[in-house]
Picture 1 (cartoon, rainbow, N blue to C red):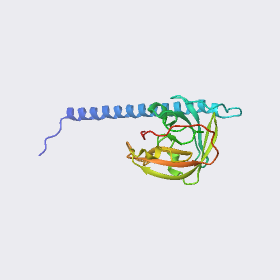
Picture 2 (cartoon, rainbow, N blue to C red):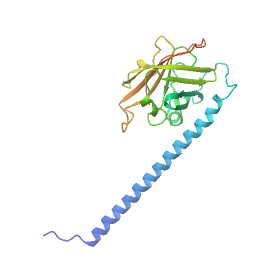
Picture 3 (cartoon, one colour):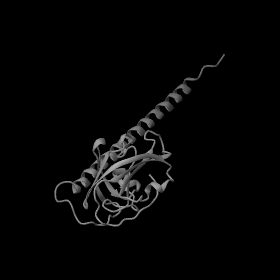
Picture 4 (cartoon, rainbow, N blue to C red):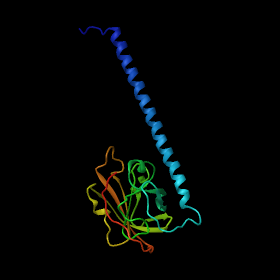
Length: 211
C-alpha cells in the first residue's frame, strides 16, 4: 500500500507550481510589452520618414545614400504593402524598416536594387505576390516602377540572386517559409524588371543574403 504524501509536500508542490505560473505570466506580459514597443517604434519611425518622400516638390538631385538614412518609400498596391526603405540591413534597421543591401544598386541606377525585410513584419504580404504585380519605389531622385517576373525559394548561400543580370532590376529578399518557427532555412526571392526609363547613373552589384 502506498504511504500517504505528507501535507507539507503538497504545500511545497503547490507553492512551486504557483511560483512557476507567476514567472511565466510575468514573462508573457514582458514579451507582449516589448513586442508592442517594437511595433509602435517601427510605426512611428515609418510615419516620420515617409513624410519626406510624399507631397509635391520632393524631387532633388541624385546623392549617395548613408548607412541608416532613409532612401525612399516602397509600395506594392495590390498587396497593400507600403514601407520606407533604409540604407543598410543591420538588425536595428530591419526592426523598423525595409533595408537596402548597401553593395547593390540604388533606385535610379543601372543594375540590381536589392531590398530585404523580415517575413513576420514588412515583407509578410510577399507570401501573396505574383507575376505581373507592380512594385513602386519613390525616392528623392525620382519615382521608379517595376513589374514582377518570378519568385523562388533559395538557399541563404545562393548570392547569385543579388547580382546584376544585364538589366535594371529589383530583388526583394525575405526568410522562407513564411510560417516557419525559428530561423528559417531558406530565402524567398522576388525578381522584377524596371518598366520605366532610368537616369544615367552607375551603381555597384553584389553582396550576400543575411537576415
